[in-house]
Image 1: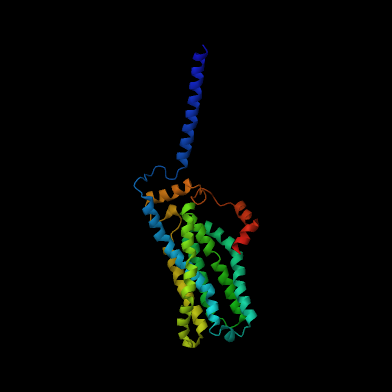
Image 2: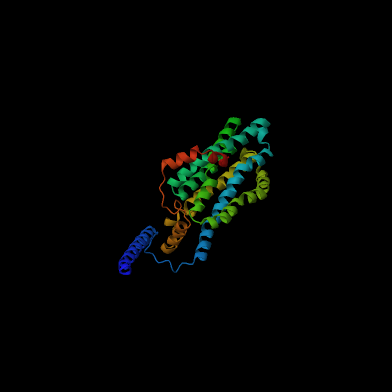
Length: 291
């Protein structure tokens, strides 16, 4: 009798487990990005190479220009910047310092705008802004003008490095992110390698248009950045779900990979909320890291 009674009970538990499992599977399928899209024909290795070629070279160039622009004042000093602007060594050091004050203050707020806007708009706007500020450094006539331009240069450049790192996390898994970020960061070393040679070549324009060599260093390097900023509107890709250079199946694979890597926010599954912003602002580690 006990064996007969146990059988229906066991079957009931098994049915309940099957129902729970079925519900869980259905829930996971419902959360799967583009669950109805067939991705069997997508080769992940080829897809990664395709993304690398579309993103990394141009982003690295932008960071190279960023580092070239922020350090160009050192080359300008070699060509009588202090003498022409009638500034002291202390005032020159203040002009260097004020750049990093605005840079540190605006790194965190900049990423908030990147989250709300498309990368092709925000990153391009930042480049265009700091290119203009860089160019205007070539027409300043006194210490106050130099300080103002350096402050604005730091403000616009602040968003590039943290913005690109967030942007890359929207495309790559954690295990893939490090090498891409390292390649991007290495562009700073490249700028240091030929920044001085470029300044030496530009210095040959001393007196052209009635302007000194240091002014032409700022103007020409700034104009290159302005051009790069304009081109970035079309070259920088937005987030994976709208990337025009990928097919629907490839876009689906990119986002599913992020979901599988528990990058919920990067995969587009999390909305921006003010509580997260205030938490980041109040966290001292955000400010120490940005400095």
